[in-house]
Length: 114
Image 1 (cartoon, rainbow, N blue to C red):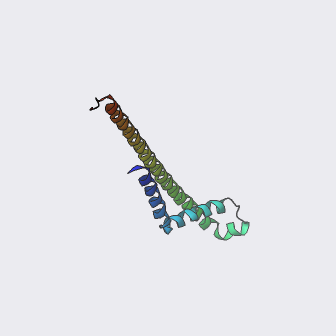
Image 2 (image 1 turned 90 degrees about the vertical axis):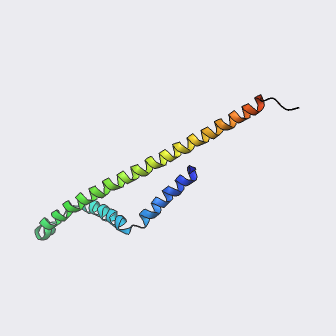
Image 3 (image 1 turned 135 degrees about the vertical axis):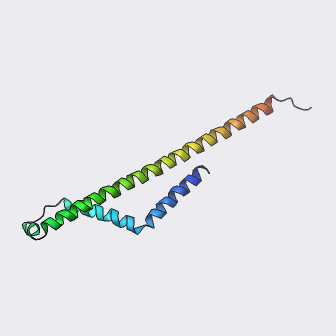
């Protein structure tokens, strides 16, 4: 398949991720929850919705961790596949070069009709 095929596979995977708005929405919520968690709550917030807010934050943090882990694993898989395809393409190029060199040597070493 070669390097061009590898590039096309990566572009296809990125395109598929872009077509998954739910995944992107979850990532956005996780980022929003992380930013919101960085600010202190006011006394009024703690008084009226403190327990609920704490439960929601804990749930979002747990979900954000799961999404983050899934994204890390997916990116590691893509990187590994791209690396494998690149190494495979390099091996093919080396083999073609060696075959060409052997053919040239055989051509030079063979007796010329004449």
